Image (cartoon, rainbow, N blue to C red):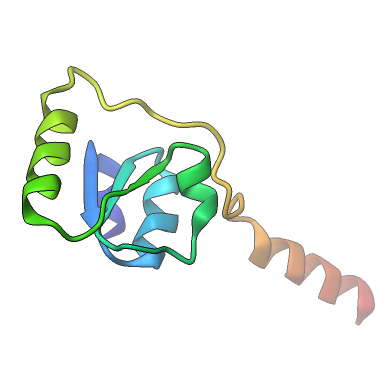
Length: 95
């Protein structure tokens, strides 16, 4: 899945985890929900909350796909992927 996300131009999902992972690759996400527990991505333009209406989903996805390039976004609001190393470093100092 990570391989596919890293090469995607656009992701359509209702998964909060996918919203976070796609952000790591700067891939825009159309969130197929009425609400999301991950507003950071919406606020930064990494994701767009579009709901569950089939016509709206088709319209927004088509518009995004027709763009020459899907804009890559800034830093991931969910972290930089280095939490495990930071934890290991802290544990090594405390031991």
